[in-house]
Image (cartoon, rainbow, N blue to C red; front, side, top):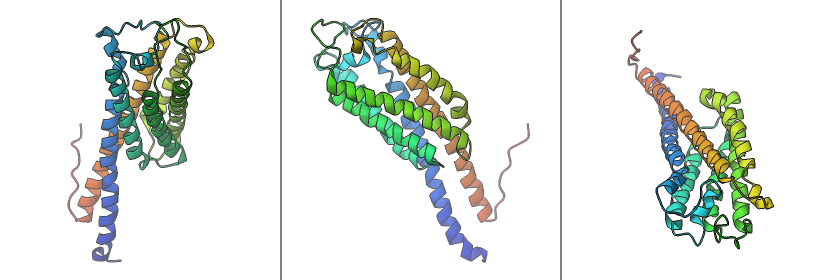
Amino acid sequence: MFAGERSPHLARGLARTGDRPCREAWAALLLAAGAVLYNGWLLEYLLPTGLDPRHSYVSELYAADQPFRPLFGGIESLCAVFVAVGALLAYGSASDGWGRGGWLAMLGLGMSSVADVLLPMRCAPSVEPACAAVHPSHTVTSALAHFFVFAAMALLSRAAVTARPRLPLLRRWGPRVLALALPTAVCTVGPLFGRPGWHGIPQRAHLALVGVWFALLAAELARSSWGRTDLVTSTGLRARGEDVPVADAP
């Protein structure tokens, strides 16, 4: 095949490949923002919420009768949207079933978190003795969010080993974050079984670890996006017969 006949096919291939770095870059930006917003509960230390962080769930901040529900519920909702859209953008960059499953789990996490805000706790059990710790609909959405985040961690950590190219940041740190996040989540279930107290500390540690997970995903996507951009640029230069710049040797 002559070069002139090959160039339209090559141009289409470059166009398709060139879209991927853009999607990955946007996904990285959204997940980085999500890492910050997921820990918006830190604002409770600046506001008169009336809740004790040691003994309260973070979701009590946006319980239906709480004064700062619009603020904390809005932060949670915005974070959930960012995570869901970021997962959709990153889904196309997955090279195998493990990765695709992981990004679908991240999408599920975002959707469950939106439902968590739409179906809030009716009251704050840590400060209202008559308020039950189990609010059925909210408990279900929270359980789904936990399921999806752990599924995403497990699947994407596995994809970091099987994917081509490899994902070194996730391969190294993903299993470690999962190993720490799982026990912190388990330590938060006391109030659901009639044993409240001190569950706020492990829950906030868990949320911080999920934020670290989002940051890891963002860093990996950003690294991949830069690598693909360099590949598309160099391939395009070669296709036009131009010299590809070579980095100076150290």
